[in-house]
Length: 377
Image (cartoon, rainbow, N blue to C red):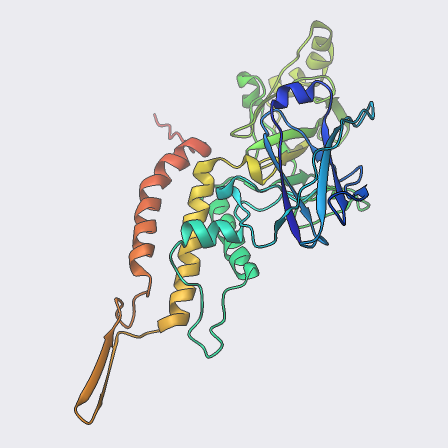
């Protein structure tokens, strides 16, 4: 496997003519080069991107590479770059190294095994004390990263990974536990009730999940399950994406007729009923690259704690000290742990202290503050 880095100088000027990068491969420096990217895997150029990465899964140390700029609509292509050899699989890949790109059609990884191994666990040998001295595999790191990501999604009551919610989805739709291209939805969501008092706040509604990337459907039904209004198509929906808050109100003069006919009778009759709003929406971050650094830091430290706990146990489980004596010669060894504490206790304690300090600020920034009012005479 070869890992190829591609630098784009003056990306703004390049984007005036091209929107993708093609990758070519040849067996020799001066030989014939054939494109190894396809229409679906050519690298998209973005305004903020100056370094791009391409992984050639079948590449060897003898292969040479060229690249060119390409426009997907006009099919205009630049001259090919000079030939060069790509990096090897041993190169570190991750957000810490500024070279992570999600696989095409997938959300990606919020942290890579290399992020954890060389940033959060730097200086720690991730090997066991068994006879084979087994080293931790990448999949073991990924397991703890996914678990840490899920923990923080629950604690912050927000979606970090991309999720697609649908109310009463059709049986023909494709569902998956993880979002990827071709998946119609990841989760089912209940309908939302009609609350007359919400219309004094311009049709305010708090969605159950956030941050919201987009609203795909927002429909209002009467108690007989007859469609009254398609609120999305008539552009009535105003969205606070960060906290998943909707406000619905007419956006042009001609819509006041349908508004008065559909909403006002329900409101003034003080009619409250469940299953009124059918809303389909997408939450989380667009892909793993767009997760804020503060959240990535929390996930990294918590994943490291989980790993250190398991790795330390595998090295010296329940071990405090040992001594050996033979014919007047003695040798002793003491670890920094007691029989019930972790081998990497100092690193764990440091991360725990940082998490306790950071958590209240992160909670305030990324989660809405729940409020309740108690009335009395």
